[in-house]
Image (cartoon, rainbow, N blue to C red; front, side, top):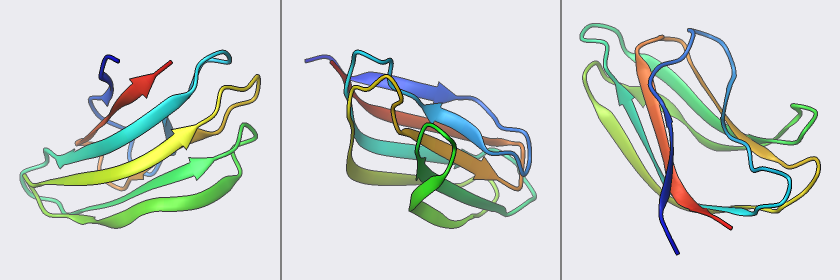
Length: 107
């Protein structure tokens, strides 16, 4: 089993962005997230959600604020089943200078 990262270097402020979307034939298991606020002055309000293939929110995985130049490390166990219409993990921040990395396996 090989660990895989799903990196997102930055986001558009106040825009929901897909972070992890499994391909139709592969399942995904996420073991953790790292969220970094690389802005040196602004506090970032951040959310990580689980959504279905129609972008309807199924649940909130993490919701919080990150201080300037700080990061948050989240240990988790999230599994997304292989499907022609897979669920996905989406992120949002009110500050564009926020990066995300999800780590896990895809098989």
